[in-house]
Image (cartoon, rainbow, N blue to C red; front, side, top):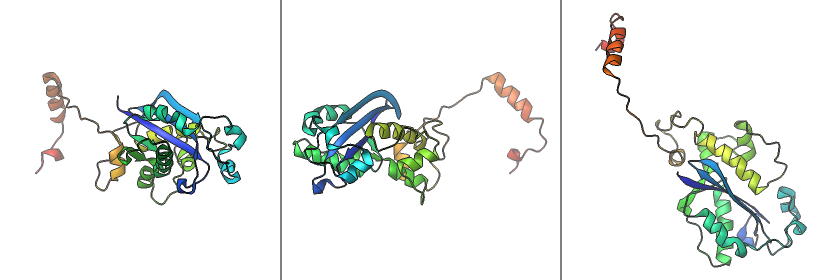
Length: 224
């Protein structure tokens, strides 16, 4: 099984350099790009007030986070769940920047950027010039959004898992023309190569096929 982890965070703001913190982390384990049922999910005390404009997006207030563990208390468990496998996120640099800031505060190594797979980059490669937010992609792929009344990290992970299957051709992998000239490199990197299997006909099958072809007069494939 090829393992990867799909990740999402909610925060108190948009920039960790301004002191904003992570308040929710969700991660879902994927096996061969499909959910295995294993996940990590924690609400966190950000050790600072949650601005009203952030609450308007994700719905969490100071009261919701009171008594929750601090990031430093769950960091080791999170890193164990992430392992050394690829990390998939929508607008991944945002999540990586916040997690790196949190990890640095508790003196843990930051995340290797080589592990990053950004589904926003994949979507832009496939749908250039179109809106490629998570909501827009769910609507494009007919994925049910009825439960998404706010930005909940665990629900967003589950939605993104379904989107990722579509972006990487997971339902009918190998049918997409990903090797055509000019195919986006990011799409190729995220898709698993399908190993061709040579099919050799039995002697009687080959004979029947030759007899069938003999019925055609001057077939095109025999002309120079």
